[in-house]
Image (cartoon, rainbow, N blue to C red; front, side, top):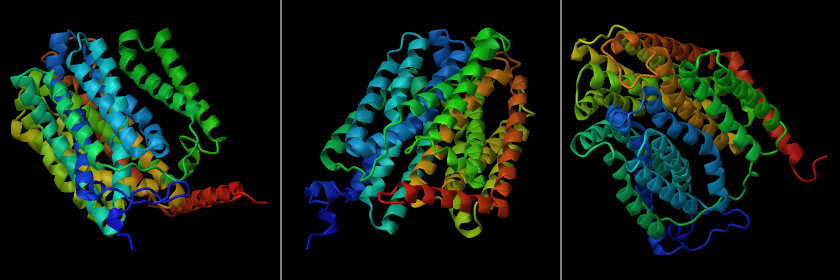
Length: 500
């Protein structure tokens, strides 16, 4: 009898039978390491850039809004393409998609390191993001297909989650060190050899796999998602520059509204929608999406503002600024696994309420910061902020997929992941708008006071997370989950061949 280790990691669906593979494809933990390598560079890139923003602004002569776009161009494209990349991988092959993503991410990183202006840097960041959208969700699919044993899969996902924490923690420190010692361009250039190594290892050790059933491509839905996200974030970032009542700003928000209505109307009629709007009838699912946006908007704004504050107001070097953000990463790494245990023991309400409270308390402390605030107070606030971020992830995913039919769990989780990136984009956009520094080349000495409005906004977002946690666990919320599950199953039965 053929051993499990010698079999393909394919789905075994019709047209994709399980077949024997060369021995090199059976090293599961090496495959996990390769996937984690891609996660590391993509996750690190999300935080490594923040600490280099002041240096980028000075060298390229960028305004604060240009620096906002440097962050948001990446997260917007990533958010827009995550679901498409996942379905593309299922269709044409996960390894092939993963390799294409690595190439695009590597090329984008190289171009970023050569960018002659902030405009070109934003364009090259978008290329990076196209590649990044093909890495993390596809790598997770590869891991799921590789580890068939549930216990091994749980351990593999645990390693995967730990890498997220490590990469987020190392990002600012590594970015600060490279910016100080070599220059900000090195933070992008360092990705290139890692990508080359990952490409070689993927070709040698990762087998190809596809899904047995793949939904049809939805170009209209994909286009509408890109349009609504770009219009919303563009309006928030450029509104202060153009004027809130200017034709350009109003046009952006009108496009956003039209795209939202169009997406809902169109997706409701599709057999295989990119975004299944029926999910939002589930109170827990809608709460999970809102919670993800609230939490990651807080995170995006925090990283953007604190980086500028530590360097431009307090006079720290990029490396010193990165070191000062370590309490956020450390407490986040500690609380992430604790959150999973709390969900298993008490459900999602307890960790989400605690997360919201932690974010609100930390932001409340930051509403008092000035140009000479004690570093001890700052570090304590940063540590509490990390607690809030660490507790939020596990219950978001759990709440999003709770009660969903198995055939829709992946789609629900993808929407939750997209919401995280949307939240970061909105947080960075709001940070510039509410502080009033959008058109400046550099922030002034009164920048600390101007951030207080954003910190109070995060206090409100934290309170919102706690309130949503309570609402998502009511009897009415549980009934809404049962209703949506019944609706999805009924529609699936109606679409089966031979159904009368």
